[in-house]
Image 1 (cartoon, rainbow, N blue to C red):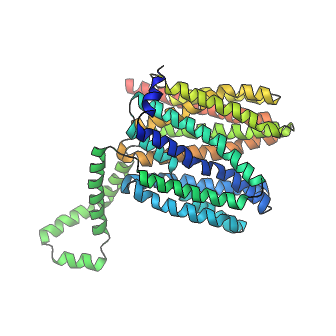
Image 2: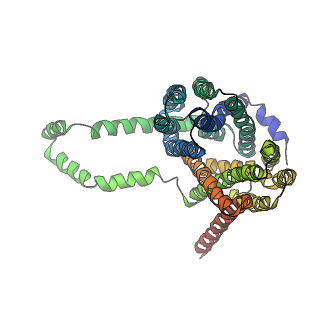
Image 3: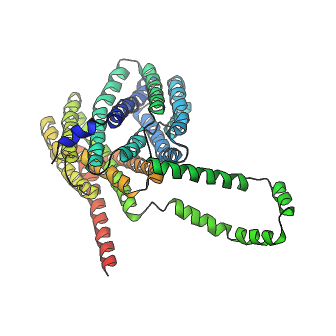
Length: 439
C-alpha cells in the first residue's frame, strides 16, 4: 500500500479543488430527502406513505435524467449542459415548499429530471485528471467525501426540519445547489482530454450538418431534387433506401460502449444501492422497534466511519479489486446485522460491511472510467448513477416488506441475500463466458 498517493493527488490543485467543490455541492441535495419527507409529514400534514411516494417520484426523475444529462455534457460541453440545472434548481426548490401535495409531485419529478449532475460530472472529470494508481486513489477520495456528505447533510436537514423551517430549508437547498452549479461553470473542470475535445467538436459539427439536412421541409427537398442531376438523384435514392439500416447502425454505434462488462458494472452499482438503502431502513427499523430511535446516529456513525477507513485503505492499494467481489463481501457481511439485539452490537457488526462500502463504489467508478471511451464517459457515468439510484429505490421497499413480515432482522437478511445471489450469478456468467472464449 502507498498512502503517499493521497499526498501526491491532493498536491494537484485542479483535483483538490474538484474534490472540495464536489463535496460542498452534494451537501444540499443529501439533506433534500429528509427535508422533503418531513415537510410533507409535518408541514403538509400528510403521512409517511405520501412522503415515500414523493421520494419515489423524485428518484424516478433522477434515474431518467442522469444518462441524458451526462450525454449533454458529452455533446455540448460542461458549461452549456449545466445551465438548465442551474436555473431549475433555484426555481423548482423555491416553489416546492409553497404548493399543495398534488402540485409538489410533478415539480419534484422535474426537479429530479434536471438535477445538477454533480456525481457523474465529478467522476467523469476525475477520470480525465487522474490515471493509473492515481485514478483509484481519486475515486476512493470521492467515495470518502460522499460518505462524509451523508454524515452531515441528512443530520442537518433533520435539525432544520424538526425546528419548523422546512420551507426555508428546501429553498436553501435549491439556491445552494444552483450556486454550486454556477461555480462548476466558472471552474469548468475537464471532462475530456485535449485530443478528445478536438475530435468531439468535429463530431458535433458533422451532427449539426446532418440535422440541418434531415430537418429540411418536404417542399424544399422537392425543390432541391429539381436541381440535382438524374444520376445523383438515383444515387441519393439508393442511399435513402439504406436509411433505416444506417439508422440502426448509428444506434448500435451510439451504444457500442455498452459491453457485457460495462453492463455487469451497472448491475453491481444497482446491487450496491439496494444493499445500502436496505441496510439504512433496517437500522432505523431495528432501533425504532426497540425504542432506541435516539441512538440511530451511533450506528450510522460506526457504519459510515468504517466506510471512510475502507476507502482510505483501498485508495492506497497498488492493485484494483473486482467490484463484484467487493459487493459479494459487503452483502454477505450485511446479513449478520439482522442478528444484533442492541444498539452497540448493531454498531460494531455494521463495521465489517461498512469497510467495503466506499471500496465498492470506488472500484465500480474506476472500472467504468477504464472501460468507456472519453467521448461517451459522461453518458456512461449517467447510466451508472441511474443504476445506483434504481438499486436504492428497490432496496428500501424490499427491506420494508421483510421487516413488516418477519421483523427488523428480515430487512438485513433480505437485501444481503439478494446481493449475494446477484454476485454469484454474475460470477457464474463470467466463468461461462470465459470458458466459451477459451473453446
